[in-house]
Image (cartoon, rainbow, N blue to C red; front, side, top):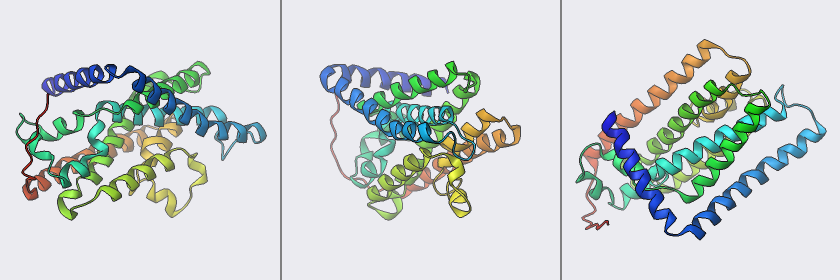
Length: 261
């Protein structure tokens, strides 16, 4: 565990140093993403000026929701930026380079890339969470726990879908569609989803575990549902590790000579 954390810290430092070489581009992408997130939330702000709640959810609940989703996705893409590109890395044979590095190859491939725009998501998300906490709608200890679980689920889900490239070849389109579905469904209040749609958001597309269940737990804590969230996170990552290892046995080298400075 210590070695893994040290590896993550080293890659984060290198990625941030590389980003600082292009500060204008870095700041532009960050500010652009903050503006994009703020614009998406603005439509809900307009809605709540007319209606006080949606299925019991108030504007502050939406602030918490957007803050958690943005911060979790931002953290996922800043620290584990290649989770969104894993299908491309596998299908194009770029995994060769990581297989020559000390174990664990999955950790190496995930943390070797960072998203500049992800810093904007992270900044917006932390700002929104701070506002919710200031208004008393967000227990800080729970917020920290849910930020970790939501980030872990976001990274695990995109990694799992990306690993399909081992078995079906070009899975890039499926990976991007799955990621977009996860994000889009996460940004709506859970009461609007009913029946099979709600089941889907707790299974096929885990938006319920990334956003809806954590917000509901912050509104009304339930140890059983908290245990369900933690169990889902653990099971998801067990599946990720199993599928990735199975995929490595099927992996065909791209015969690429990759030079990295």
